[in-house]
Length: 96
Image (cartoon, rainbow, N blue to C red; front, side, top):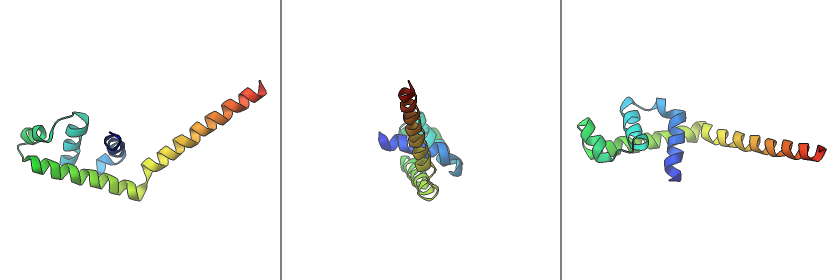
């Protein structure tokens, strides 16, 4: 499940860099929960072709993240903000 959520996060960041087909298959699979067979039937292609396109999309998303690290930086910023919130709460408690 973690990998699925990770890929969805990456898609939110880099999805527009994928081909139209890759975007459509990714959305069908990850957002609409269609099976590879259902996607294949809906697009009149083989199940293997869908699998190949999804694999390429996933690899591209991971490649973009390995270079740009936007997802990693976003997580780090959230950590820092949470730490600041905790720090500020403690400061307020110290004053009271």
